Length: 283
Image 1 (cartoon, one colour):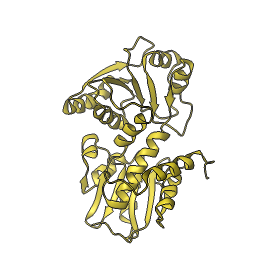
Image 2: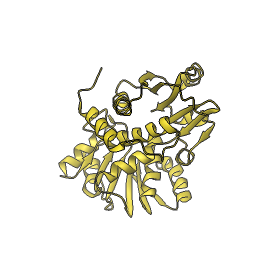
Image 3: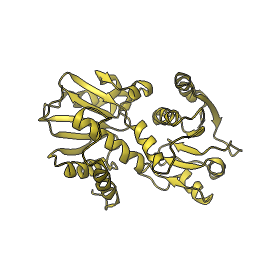
C-alpha cells in the first residue's frame, strides 16, 4: 500500500545533471497543490541497490533514467504490462509492500507523436537497438505499425527486438547503417545517445525517406540525425515531448498508483509543465 504521507521523490541516473525532470515535476506539483520535493541524484548500476535500501518511509517514488532501467526492472516486486514487455522500468512507486515498476516511456512516445497528429501508422523505422528501442517498438505497435525496420550497427543487436515484435504481432527487420536507399516510412524514432555521430551521407539517406523524426535525445541538440532532417526540410522533434508526456504518466502513478487515472485539471498541468521546459534551465 502506498504511504500517503510520503513526500520525497527523485530522478536517478548517470549522467543526471542534464535532467529536466525536476522542472517538470515541480511545475505539476505546484498546480496540484502538493508539497512534494523532487530532486536528482547521480546513481550508477553498482550503487543502485544500496541507494534504494537507504531510503526511509518519507520516499514516495523514483524516476529512473539510463543506465538504471534494467536494474530497476529486476528490483520491482510487481510490474505493469509495458515494463514486462520491454524489460525496462523508468518509474518505481515505493509501496510498503515492495516497489512497483512501470514503464511510462512507451506512453510518452505515443503521446508525443499524437502532438503531431500521428495516432495510427502502418509501419515505421527505429534507429538504434539499445534499451530505449524496446519502448519505441512497443509504442509503435500500439499505433498499429505492422512492419518496423531497425537500423543498427550490429545486426545481432536487433534479434531481441525481432523476438519482441513476434510477441506483438509486428514484423521487425534489420537494416545496416549505410548511405543507401531506405524504404519510405511515416515516422522514424531515433534512440541513439544525443552525442552519437552518424555520418552525414547515412543520416541524409535516412532523412530522405524517414517521415517525421522523433529523436528521444534532448540534452544534445541538434543531433546528427536532426541536422539531416533539417537539411532535408523535414520535421524533427527532440525528446522533450516524450519527456513531458512520460512525466505526466509518472505523476499519475505517484499520486494515485495508476497510470490510467487522469490528474485533476490535467490540461492545466500540461500547460504549466510545457512552460517550465521553456524557462532557462536551472543549474
